[in-house]
Image (cartoon, rainbow, N blue to C red; front, side, top):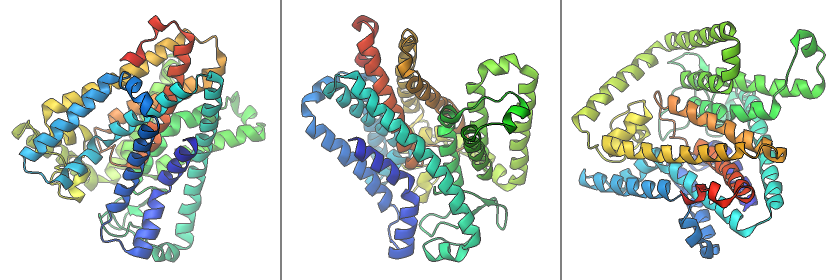
Length: 452
């Protein structure tokens, strides 16, 4: 199971390169949506095989985390029903689920992995070894992805003809179904934006922000002044360099949404420092906000289009509060959709209606409650320092969820399954481990998360 997860996450990271080189460079696929469908089918098959091989654990699993799972089923059933009433084709319905609700299924299906480990292996030390192994894998996957990004960006400038030959197109903007540009531009003949090994600079920005907190956790380094910094050892220099490189990568995406997520993440990670150093913190926030405003001016045409899209899409929500059916809005415009609100929440209201958007919000609150329960229960076990790192990494991953909620106001943040798979699988493996650890250490009456 662990080996498949590692292989699948590596495949997810390299997905855009595979699709570009094989699909556009070699085969010229007539249906560019098929590779993404194939990737999702692989995960569905893996989940189905797990269910078949662990059929005896289904009954106990169905008793765990019932509320978010039942709510998601209700939401999808209603979404399909309202879509059929609106005359939507099944293709549109699948597209709408993929861009609006698939990430919730990824999260909840990953809970089954945690449940299997909990059931099959009662030895918490074996669990700990598995988690440490997975965390080391995740750590180096994040490092290699970042370093490979810089190497690949440099090669694009040195040998652009090579990339044009293997499936990339010239400098341009995104157009669905044609070769992805070798570089995206802020506008026609504008400044190149770096998308790394992802399909789009904004998506790469999501990835960088998603795992920035645990990169800081893995490689955090304290320095007492410039003198200490200049005399730092090799390990300290490597640690701080990796953090600086990640921040540089965020800046080079020229993604305003990533910058906003960065600000939110920094604020959540440094609440105590902000309270202690109010003047310094205020100066840093002013500089960061000035950067966002400056970039918005630099990309003025894009800024105006985003603002117009949001206001126009609100009009559609008011006119049809029951929704227009799945596949109507958001990234679905690359298929048969007609409305691009540039806002994930408005996208859901357009697809499934205002009432059922609030039902989806209930799922998020239920998942948040589970996360909060883990955090609260672990507080009583802090004497056990062996799991502090795992607990903190999982806690810091939650910071991305806060950033994501804000980022969703400006873009369709769940459109890229690469981010959804990487983040939600990683998050729930850690959550499942901590749930098991807490259940074994605390009295049963005080740990009821598996019954919720």
